[in-house]
Every structure is written in C-alpha cells, then in structure tokens.
Length: 288
Image (tube, rainbow, N blue to C red):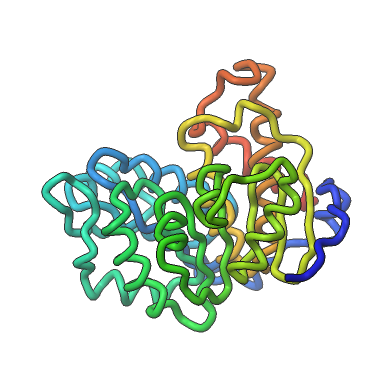
C-alpha cells in the first residue's frame, strides 16, 4: 500500500489550478452521459437526487434506471431524463434480472452511478456483477450505498471508479471498524479497491495522494445527502474529470452548498434536495 502523503486542503485556489474539462462544443453529447441505476419501490428518491445532481454538475445527458413501479412518476419528476423501468422483486426491490437495454446503456454511458435507492443486498450483489463487465473502456463508475455493501461482499476489479461511502459502508469495505484517522482510512480504501474515495470530507486516490475538505458541517448528515454527492461525482466524471479530481470538486461543492443554506435553515435544518440548487452556483463561481 502506498504511504499516504500529507493531506492537501481543498480550496478554491487549489481547484482553479485543477480546472474541470471544458465542453468543446455546444451539444449535450459534448458534456457526457450519466446513467443512474437504483431506486426500489420504497426509495426512488435516491435516483432522483443523484440524477439531478449530475445535471447540476454539468453533465449533458441523463438516464435513470429505477424499479418499474416508480418509473413513470420519476419520468414526470425529472423530465430532462430518459427513464427505464427495471424488474422488481415481490417486495419492491430492483431485481437482478436486468433487461438487455440497461446493459447496453451501461456500455454507452460516460459515467454510471450504481446504488442510490437500492435496498436488497443479495440482488445488488448480482446487479453489480452484471453491470461491471458491461462498462465500456471509457466508462467511469460511481459506487454508493448498497453497491458498496455488495463490493465488500464480492470484491471486484474496478476500472475508472470513485467510491462514496459513509462511515458504516467504509467499515464494511475495510472489514473492520473505521478508526479516528479518516485520512488514513480513506487512503486504505483507495489502495485496497484501486479507486478514488471520498469519505466525510477526506479524499484519496490509489497512488496515496490525499485531500481534505474543511467546509462541511453536521447538516450534510441528512437523508439523501449522499445521493447528491454521488450524482455530483458522476456528473463531473461524465464531463471528463479524472476520478480524484471529480471527488475533490464534488466534495467541495457538496460542502459549500450546505454552508450557503445554513443562514436560511440553520446548520442542521436544510434538506438534501435543497443542496441541488446551490451546487451549480458553487461550481460556477470556483470555475470563473
């Protein structure tokens, strides 16, 4: 395992020296396609939050794959997206009996976010095993929520990828309790899985580089906040950002969006969906 370097604090100055790829033309295809796969009958909102976040991050095209019982409602809620209904189990979880159309979309996407809203670990383990081989050579993967649990149970070779665990999910991935040194734990995850990782404001890549975001506060620990973060990462990857770059920019935008909401709603009173209206402005002001 590479020895982690001293964490670099993420500031607007650091990000401006690490600019996001600019779209060459004015066509939506120039800014990349994001596919979000998740959303059981009881938790379709995770896909909505991740998908809209990807668009707010600048992705050009959005595709959502969600349990078929909620697909129509989601297509109305997010008219900017193509929505594909997926088979469900009797309890409403997304089934691993995936249609060929989904697997084709995986291969064509620039970034795939897998996990938001999934709620059955056995089915998710099979879904992960089916989706990963279909990713194209230039397809970036973002694994979140139950997809991380599935990865911990069945470690798989990842290509270009970012993991977005919380502390519990990080513990599953490490196979032990997470220690107090989150920079070291994030670096350990990155080295173990060969992917960039963002964990509670700490980011690492497999080579041992580490970063720290210091703007986040307790308000980000709210339902759906992680879905927003995973969508931001996916949107930036679709635009052509490298994994650690996407993780750093997304983590910063996520945290500063919370800061911008705090004067209106308090440090712990804002909702994850309200972050969506702040992240594009945050990214835009840093990119100026």
